[in-house]
Length: 354
Image 1 (spheres, rainbow, N blue to C red):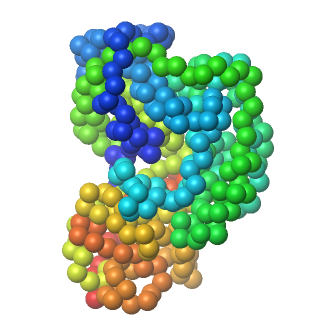
Image 2: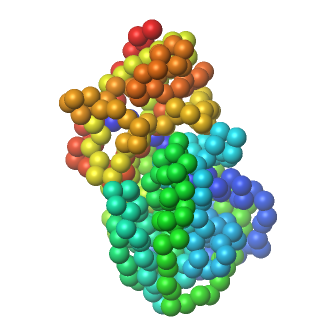
Image 3: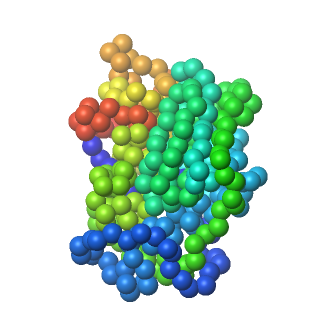
């Protein structure tokens, strides 16, 4: 299955902040581990791999902390991303996010409401960019983290084309996501040279481009390769572990001059799947007929589904129609994938029918 070099929504926000202010030069105070040779010279940038990862975490966490009502209180995103409102590539309109920084030094709990069949996950990431937990389903979950602060990302599935469904998430579900922490010390970043962090990130992104996949970059400490772990923090901060979400893309390389069709086997997921359309710059280009998922798909009798790519003028008023434009391509997302089956999942060939 084709893999995508994909930055998460959290990583993408970094572009809004990383090149702005600079802090006084210093090093983050984090534990260092013995490690063999890296292809990048971290000393040249005045930090260790561990210090770099902590700096990336602090930058990301601080970006959101500054927008939170207070420590331990989440920000709730309340509407889908529109073409006019998008600021990052590969925007995700499958879920509404609830996110923020939590003081974890004395432990905390997170409570998730009953969402029925609707997907909801709560992802806990520590300051060293290791996943503490991913929680699913109604309940109150206790967390004892390995760092003083953690970042919480709650994803709640919604239908971006149904205002009533979006309103249900905003009014009935998001307010019931609660956090109870035993400490409420406001978040402060460690001191580091932000310009050096950005310069090192640029070098690491070159290494990531050689690999071309986030496979193996996010896992618990001791199970993830140390350098892949650094690359994950650099290019995909906040990315879910592969067992919780996986992505594949098709560059397509077809003109937008007719109607195209492809039939997909039913994706092997225990959560949900989606296909999202993007233009040649990997931005959303339509606010209608741009996403296909369980909310709007029509399945064939055998469980597969046939997608029609093209305008209503070219394809007609058919089921599973997705708009296309110059340089069109798509990303397929798999939440709670069955990895043993997903490794053999193949994207079908897209053929012109009109």
